Length: 338
Length: 284
Image (cartoon, rainbow over all chains, first blue to last red; front, top):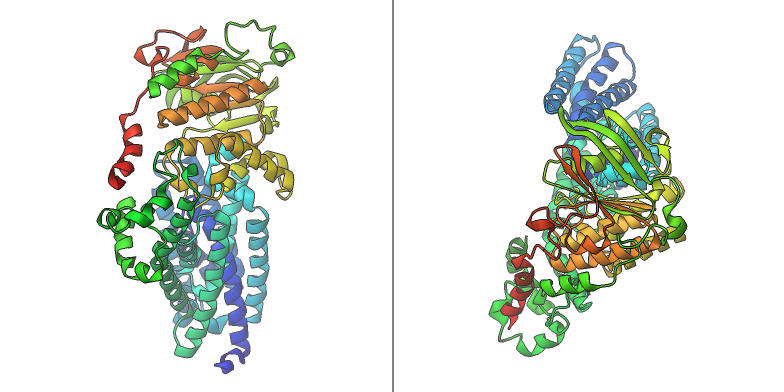
């Protein structure tokens, strides 16, 4: 177990994994917030052209990818901001053009090897060079400075763009900044997760986190936690089992999502109980029965048990022994509530 | 029940800003440049002309209602005032400054039309309301006094106890109150509200009217887009009625624009009461 921390390339891979695990969800949450979860995927496609350019001109593909990604992201943002009816067609052109152009450029370049392109598509822990790590570190620092430092501004713009404009925020500049940061993050994550799955690490940890949280700040923190843990575990597993790192990480992240979804229902039930104890403050109108809820229950719980099965809020804190067998049923009543 | 509340509401003494009182009574509040001065506004949305020369003035401390049928240009007028729909022709001055050079956005509180579309990530009531404080703290950290302002705004709409709850789980009326708190948190001199009563049950409408009343008494000017006057009627100084992108009436609130504008008329949503009765029936 210990020996996997010994080789230099593994130390670099773990370090890169931490950086990716932190940056990808911290920018991804804003994309998810304004329902642009797949934007990272589009940038990932465009990035392939950048990698191809790097191969062709024998430059570091990291830098060419950053340039092309930023350019692509800015175009995407401009298309989105115009709200054009044919916007999605324009985006489709961009994505597929980026993908096709990348493969063509790689094929044209002399130093191309199929394995090398493969490592960019799916991620590879073996290929994080010291130079790559320096670039990843630098870019990650920039992304984090923006996403943490401007979190209130970014939150306001992604939550309600029109309102943000009335608060005097330079909405257009912030939107462009967000697009550029997403592009930079794609490049950061490219080495470890691979271009095809970059977007997953931006979106899946956020989706997992919001199963459990109800505030934006908590979602962001949890998503970063999920990102770091799955990236580290993924790289470790990748080494142990000789698997490509990207799919391993993403699979672990999706497992986390499933796990969080499973424990979300009981957790929501507990919270609901806590809020019921606060009394009728939740209502606009004072309910006649609202305040009496907790007192009424002990006496009548047996009699109205069958009726209560579908009314989640009324359930009393009856202890864990009663709670356990109800988990399946609570899922169904949760479905009804939605 | 709702009919009773409406009646008692119109019996209440009118605040100083109502049409019956002279402009002199409000004192210096009323002087100074118009808060909103829109002249000859022409705007198109999606290639269709929506505003065809709208004049609209809101003076300090005044409550102006924008009325009109669907598609008459009410919302577009408001959106052009806040700058999200650009004017093709015409002038817009805010607090005496041309729109282009207006920077005092903290003086304006905007309450958009409530949409049911939630953002993709959960956010608490406090987090949403805090965004209204951005003009004050800007790039600086959110400090104690900003937090206190958020608490005050939440208290004034009666939602402080829900501060930690997710906005996605609020009712229509509660959500509307959160949006109002977000606009009030900066203590604005002009409140712009787009259909604040839409999809809000009768009891919450009364709460909203009370919130608005206290803001008006503080001296805040209000520009309201309304579908019907409803419980807000006693607060309104002036009504501007739009028809097909033109001003059809500018003066005292009209008494007779269809059934909806009748004084005391209210949308009584039958399910508003049923909603509260159902759980009782189940538990009884």
